[in-house]
Length: 474
Image (cartoon, rainbow, N blue to C red; front, side, top):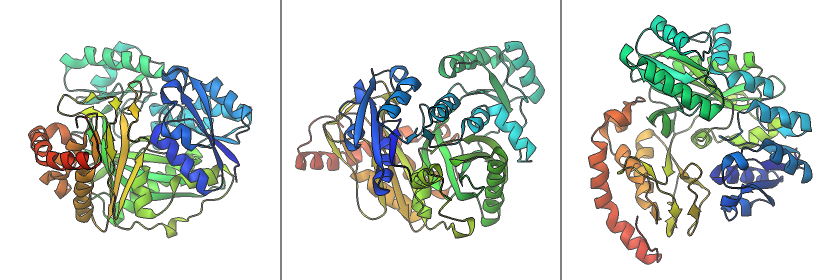
């Protein structure tokens, strides 16, 4: 087993990884920017070292500095978490050259999964169903135009090396074509260092369903069932759940087997997800996310399997602790991502100091958070406060429990998207399981309901703020 792990990340995911290390008897090392000097994760770790100034380019994206710190503190391995350098093949390769274990897939795999077109080719090779799209990436606007016309409207443009919905654009007609391509290329260049993009036929109002996979160095590959990730805003996931109401046991087995088959073909090692678009009873390969996911906790809640511990076991040259026949999904889990943003003001970020913070509790409640009362949320990173994960015996109980948990969640001093989650949990279409990626855009009544819910629930916030001596605006 590894002896010391440097966590090249911040916030709740850094703490999540460090907790797993502590349970395994492994020392953890934090690296932090000047903006995170007093953050919880930098104090929780056994050791902590300053990376650089607040901008990620000077800290959490500084490969040379992270490797230098890992060497100097004698870390055996580096866990990249998600985001930042987690899917960067250059970072994985730098770890390999330095003789430091990268807790994730090898750089050779990341070079394929990090390029959407290369991943599509791999899926095509093993006959995983694909949406019609371009066979090669392109950076010439005229070439992209021709690709679009060949596939036919509507299409979706994506950066070839991107993720998280960044730079994606839906094109419905010739009139939108040139401007949308130019915008996507510009965003791709600034975000991912290349303006290569590719296109796919756009399926209107599909579901987004991903399968969690684990693969060790001995050829063992399993899937841990699916997560429904269809509740999104601007292509970014807001709410995730496991299992999905859209899949029966037969379809679950078929899609899970396809995910395992693709992982074997890639010679995948570690934790990751194979993502699918699901529409009208059919599924199509979307991409591979070659890292631990933000929403991994819902899978842990329904399977009882600690995914981060499995990552560490794999990196320690140990076999998976579970076989496919042993995987059982029990009950239902839903995750709400709690962000410091104002949903009543076009989701403007709301950084600032938490003048009052009290998370919910009770049976089936899990809060993965990196904040505390008095903590100042920086304005230079994603404004995630926490992930609220709820487990119940079935979907109905889980939704009711999530409503209760959201009602108890008190955050004073910054605006949050809690009222959005409350409105969604009370939405009849969500409750019925009628989900698709355009849900938030199509459910125009959410805005009115958020205002109503804010007024309805304010008395509790006021009472609890008085009890805990919280001061400030919600």
